[in-house]
Amino acid sequence: MLKIGLTGGIGCGKSIVSALFEALKVPVIDADVISRQLVSNNPETLMQLVNTFGDKILTANQSLNREKLREIIFSDAQKKTIRKPITPTHLSTNQNRD
Image 1 (tube, one colour):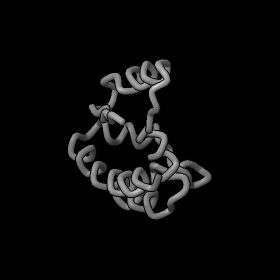
Image 2: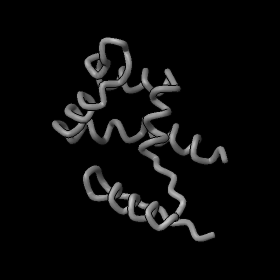
Image 3: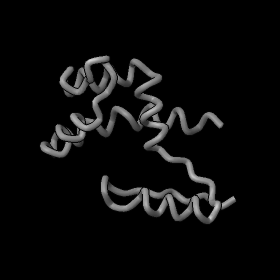
Image 4: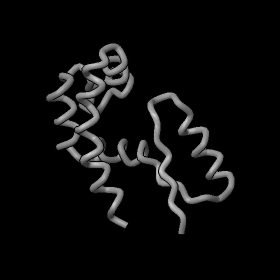
């Protein structure tokens, strides 16, 4: 089976292309979905994010406030590069499970 990796920065159109693939019945593994699951199901990943960006990225119920994290990352290019090593480590571990 041919495997295609769809990569690019935030806001570059990956979701649109992914939706087109799905409409064509092409199987899609969405790293964004896996990333959300990792943060919600893996306290270690969430704690790494909190240790890096502070508890201001948490909601009142101690879950990740994605909008606040996005605000922080997009307002500071250096912080954007800090986040990159945190989630891909857990993502690559999870994507190879099946």
